[in-house]
Length: 156
Image (cartoon, rainbow, N blue to C red; front, side, top):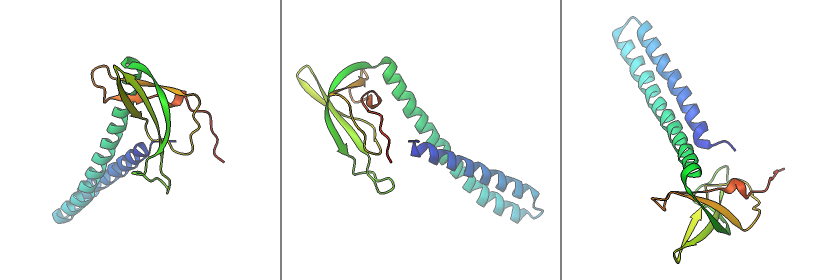
């Protein structure tokens, strides 16, 4: 599934650029100073806001992907026991709530519970353990490698 924030970022960036170009072009082409300011102010400002939201959304998606790859490359790989799937009721997409894989591992007598990113559909999990990549300096930064334990599923 495509990332909804990436789609939102692309749409807002394209609309923002179109409105900004339209506002500047119409503002420059009109002979009256007041009309120039109106078009430049409304279309240009609206386009600038949309463009900033879109670029910010795309930057956030890129940053999250970069963090995930950094954890997979340089993080500590820890095997964790799969506890199950939980429904994330704080989010609703097309009337359906995503699920998250819940797992836990123990270290020095302390149990740590980790949750994966949101999974849409009805994922099928293979096995009892999953790899958690953890930042060696900050235990709160981790990535649950769900792709390694998910069975191929086709939803009809």
